[in-house]
Length: 73
Length: 245
Image 1 (cartoon, rainbow over the protein chains, first blue to last red):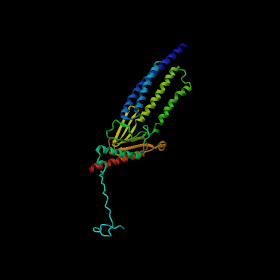
Image 2: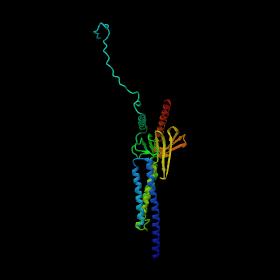
Image 3: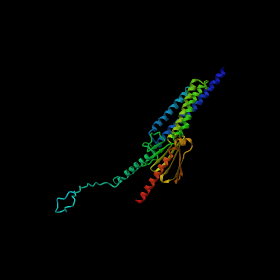
Image 4: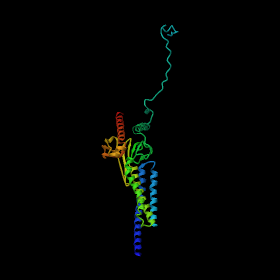
């Protein structure tokens, strides 16, 4: 029983590490998205660009929240 | 018949001719361009052609439309100061159908797994984080696809034809050709969807270094061809006018 719980702990730790790695990659990607959306908005100026840039920043905030929630597991 | 009273001057049977009212002669310039400066003249020409474009293509309803006629807000970084965009076209809305369907499917997947109790062996906090992560991925997938569509523009201006597209947010593609360099324009509408929603590909062959520009899945290809033809005629007539001067 104790061994089983130990394995379960290792499994959860493995999942946690896996989640954190992917969350960090996701955060990096979100920063790329912000950069790209800003650059695209400079290239093509339209009245909805502000909304799109806001969405990209929202995605960065959510990605940071995701990392925090993964660390808090 | 009235007879003249001044019989010494006029013969008796001559009719009375009343004196003509003085006519007011007003000066009218021969053409509106006679009083306009060259820049105003260009603007006036552009406005006239803009009206012709409206007559040819109709009006667009919103900025999210895939067929923007004479867009007022839209500009692009390579645009010249005196360059006017007559038409901005994106791929047809229906071309987004596949990724929208996939996004909806991705949104349903966590509900499906929770219904089957697939991840019940994991603690609730892990499950919550996993679902949160999954929805973020779904969101960014949809957002990326939307941006690729939204910033994929084919522009027809008074000077040139421009193709701007961003592939996967990381690659920017820019191609342009002058109106005078266009040699051939051909269109093809394929499949049930293309025929039903009237969208297809437009191939513009040019004499420039980029020998062809391909408008993919654009709505109303026939109307675009008409506009290009009009612009070519305008270009030819302005060139002839320049030679005459």
